[in-house]
Amino acid sequence: MLGSAVLAAAVVLGGCSSAAAPAKTGTGSGPALTLAQAQAAYDSYVTASTAAARQGDATHGLAMVGDAQWALLHAQYTALATKGVPVTQYSYGTPVFYVPALPTYPLWFVVQVPISTEVGGHLGPAVSTLLAFQRYIPSRSWTLDGSAVLDQPLPALAHDSAGYATPVSTTGPSLLLPTSLVGATQAAVVDEGPTAPAAAAVGSGPQTTALFAAQNAQGNAASARGLNYLWLLQTASFAQYELRTADGGALVLYAMYLNTTTEHPGNLPGAPIPVPANVAPLITKGATIGQRGVDANWTYEFVAVDPPATVHGAKVEVIGGSGGPTYGHAY
Image 1 (cartoon, rainbow, N blue to C red):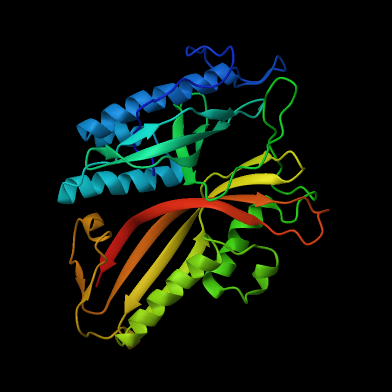
Image 2 (tube, rainbow, N blue to C red; image 1 turned 180 degrees about the vertical axis):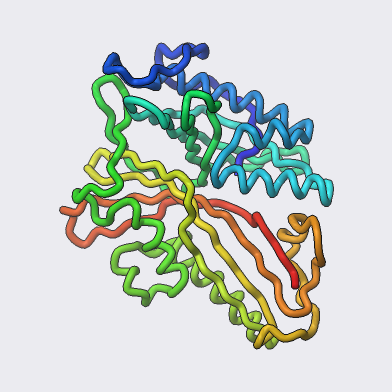
């Protein structure tokens, strides 16, 4: 989502300098990433990505992002190249940092920050957003690898006495679901609806049952036109980030693909099927009208709260999500 930013306020980390030494490699002398270094990485991204977006510089802009964030920003720069659609500009408010005390690479941290989007030269309302930054190995730079808009307040997160957040194992038995299964369980509800068996473990809301309802409505509209509409929310092989909540649960940030197909029954030729307006700028070769069908791919990033296994009747709650189209094909 976030291809650029304007730093609007100071970072709230008492005593942290904006300059930071290179991260340590984890020799038992303390965390490999300090709070001050995380702040410096964030500041650097904000400044450089803003300049790249204003200049339409895809080379430098895409070098500062990774994983799902790269797919989303690449779509923005593609739309700039094909249709002249400007890369989105953002204004950042005051960030709050959640930095796990990791012993070595890969290093990562999470930032919660209110972000406003510039539309027609004016800033829209600020929305609370989580950003995930990662530096995989020492020879790579920091990149923004994930972002998701929060639908609900962030739960209290656990910290140690030095102010560092607590990472979570993906397979620990203390949670309702292993964090590695959170996305797949959400996807089952989005694909099958509130009667899916997975709904026993995942709460209803904008990113689950409402997302199913929206896709189902598109299916009904397509059916009224004599077309088939298929959708599938599926897991993606991007990095996932987990932090311990104060009550012993986990906050999970992860990315998913939503694949959709609109086609004539039997995949036979028929009346032209237009590519959705927000997907058409992503098609650099080929037609934007399908004689048989149209495929589209969306990349989504989500935030979920996985409760402690000891809480009776609790469900995983997906408390935020955002994304956009990243691929289109007409045939």
